[in-house]
Structures are given as C-alpha cells and as structure tokens.
Amino acid sequence: MPIVPSGDDADHTDQIQTPGQVDPAQTALRGGVLRIGGYFIGILVATFSSALFFRHLGVLKTGEYVTALSLVAIVAGVSDLGLTAVGIREISTRPPSERWSLASDLLGLKLTLTAIGGVIVTTITWFAYSTTLAAGVALAVVGLGLSATQDNFAIALVVDLRLGWVAALDLMRNLLTAACTIALVLLDAELVPFLGISIPVCAATTFATIILVRNGRSLAPRFNLRRWRQFAATVLPYSAAVAASTLYYRVSILLVSAISNGHQLGYFSVSYRVIEVLTVVPTLLVSSAFPILARAARSDHARFTYAIRKVFELSFIVGAFIAVSTAVAAPIAIDIIGGPQFRPAGVVLAFGGLGLGAMFINAVWSYGLLSLGEFKAILRINTSALIFNAILVAPLVEIAGARGAAIGTSITEVLVAVVQGWAFTRTGHPVRTSLGIVPRVLLASGMALVPLALTAIPTLGRLVISVAVFTAIVALTHAIPREVYQFLPLDRFRHRTRRAGSPS
Image (cartoon, rainbow, N blue to C red; front, side, top):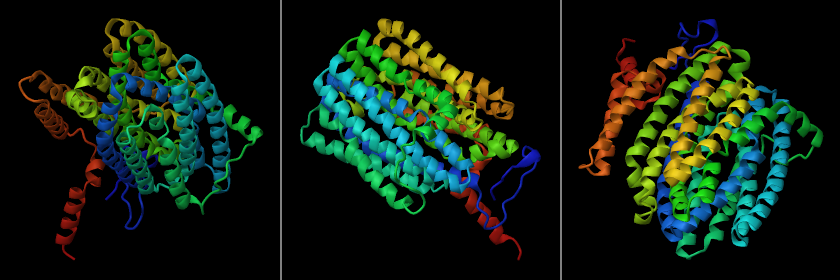
C-alpha cells in the first residue's frame, strides 16, 4: 500500500491509502518512470539515426551543426525564461477559473520572445558565420516556436498528472525526429535540412497534443502587454536564472569554436550531443513530481520536505548510476554514434559524465527552490555559475581542447549542485535524513569505476561488471527508497500473494 506522509507527523507516522483512493505521489512516480522509459526507447531509435547522421556529416560539419543548435538553444533559454516551469507552478496552485487564461498569456509571451530572439540570432549567425548556417538557424527557430506551443499545451496534461500521455508525446517526438534524420541521410542532404527537422516533428506533436487538451482549455495565444508585465515582475529573477543556466554548455561550445580548432570542436560537439540527450532524464524525473511539490510548498510544508527528500534520494542514485555508466561506456557510445573518426571524443564524454550526474541533483534543488518561490536565490547561483564556467573553461580549452571544456563544465555543474543544496537547506526545509544515502551511493560509484582499470577486458565487459557492482552495493546497503520497491511489480505480487493467503 502506498504510504503518504502529511502534516506534523509526516516524518514519524505512515498514513495508509484507503482502497480505491488515488495517491498523487504514486501517480507522479509512475508517470516519471513512464516518461523515462519512453524516452529511453526513443534514445535507442535515435542512436541508430545519430550513427548514420554523424557519419554522414563528418567531424567538421558536426561542429557547425552543434554550433547552430547552441545558438538556437540560447534563443530557447531566453524565450522560455523559465515560463514553462513557473507556469506549471502557478497553474497547479491557482483556481481552475484562472488557470488557462494564464496559460494563453504565457503562450503569447513565449512566441513573441522566440520571434524576437530568432531574428537577432539569425542576423548574428549571418555576419559571424555564413549565410548557409544562418538559413539553418532560421529554420530551427521556426521549429522552436512550434515546440514552445506544444510544451504550453502539454501543461494541462502535466498539471492533471496525465503523464502517460506526456510520455507518449515525448516518444512520438523522438521517433519522428529519428525517422526524418534517417530519411535525410538516405537522400544525401546537406547541413541546412537537418536543422529544419524540428518543423514537421513539432507540428505533428502539437497537433496530437491539441487533440488531447482541446476540450479543457483555450488554445489561442493572448498578447496582453499589461498581463505580461504583471507576470514578468514576479518571475523575472527566475527567468534570468534559467537563461543563465541554459548557457553553460553553449558557452563552452562557443569557447571551443573560438579558441581551439575544428576537430576539437567536432569532438566536443559529438560528446555534448550524447550528454544533451541524457540531460533530459533528470528533468523528466523531477518535473513529474513538480505539481505536487508546488502545491505542498504552499499548504503542507511537512509533506513538501518529505517529497523533496524522496526525490533527492532517487535522483542521487539514478544520477550516480548514469554518470558512472557514461564514463565506463563512453568508448562504445562514441564508436556507435560517430565511428572511428570521432574516437578521441570518448575521453571527452567520460569527463562529461561527472557533470551529467550533478545535473540530477541540480534538478531537485532547482525545482525545490522554484516551488518555494526562491527566484532570487536561483538567479544569484546560476549567474555566478555562468561567469565561473566561462572563466574556468577558457584556459582549460587553451590547454586541453575539448577535454578541458568537458572538465571545466563538469566542475561547474558539481559546484552548482553543492551551492543549490546549501541554499535549499537555508529555506528551513532540512534534508539531513537523506544525506545518509550519500556515502553509500558514493561508495557504489567509486567501486563501479574500478573496471575502468581492467584494460584487458573489452569495454562492454567492463560496463557489465560496473553495472553489476553498482546495483549490488546500493541494494545491499539499502540505499534505494522503499517507495521504489512499492512501485515494482514484484512488490505488488508479494502483497497480493500475502493477501490471498490470509484467512477470510
């Protein structure tokens, strides 16, 4: 039976769900698992398409492609400005009569900012790079506008915890992207069409989302300057913080392109593409619980602290596992995706895995601070981290090229995780009971990295040993939260077996 702590006795008393009652926490956990599962299915398909894609482009063209996407990502960060996350927080806690008018205002604001940012970045690309790359950036910005529209419509599904549909839409987007990529490779397309793939893909997923939510909310964007000003005055610090956080890796890419050579840019770019695919996982994991966190932060602080603690525990374990697996499996990943010409990127990806693990913790503290409305704290941390990252990465790129960029960016991510955790504890919501799992998971991670020294064993064999060691240690040290066991089919099977065997 699901356990739902609430109120003053949340840390001491287990409240049992009555039969037929839906537990939002279990719904969020199930939805998070569905979204991650669907995403990894998409990754398997995308791996095949990416292998064809990177071989088709080659090292130098890959660097140009990722540079263009990095410029568009800056537009995405500035145009979104955290509006999707803040929108979910506000819509989750407002009366139903106010929810969807706010969503329409947010959609109008995001589309306006996307159009302005797109014109600026396309113009910069035209003068700084080439007309060809500028054309690709312009196409990608159109796709970004469609993606922003779909994300806004999907807020209704997230708030209502219809996360199975959200997972299906995520999977649909990944499958369509892979299909379009493969088609363009077979047609021997040049760089620009690949940058426009998001247009048909996001158009299709937007149409599917409209079918799911059309009866529950208004779909038309609203362009009300007065309402925008009111909302911006509240969320501007968080918006600036999100804009800063989106620039870590993008600044690193631009520094490599400016300081180092085309081959180093290509190596860092293909490594970054692998990291970028996996960075979605912490967001999927934590954002599934975000509506619950937002509501609890306003009305039930004990429940909020309990929820954050459990999300931290799960995210720390998953993040450590993915970081270690990425470091051990980096040569395989690069060989599959890029082939022999990208082989030097394996070490770059291995160093990047450390920062990837830290992103899971960053997501927990970021959403926790957002739930509490601590916008200024997030702004101070992210702005400082952006400046620190640029100062640290520049000399490291000069010394070690792509490898230096990966090391510097990972150090920044780890520091942000530590500082955000400290900032969260200062809000009066202790997570000390969660910290007991930290040494256990660190022990598992350290032991799971030992196979890296077994150079006589093939990389796949080292990965299998690493996964087995990590899994065994976290299980034997009881680091896995009991709520995860409650979700597993085996736990439910044992529960039904005990109930069936009890006397009537």
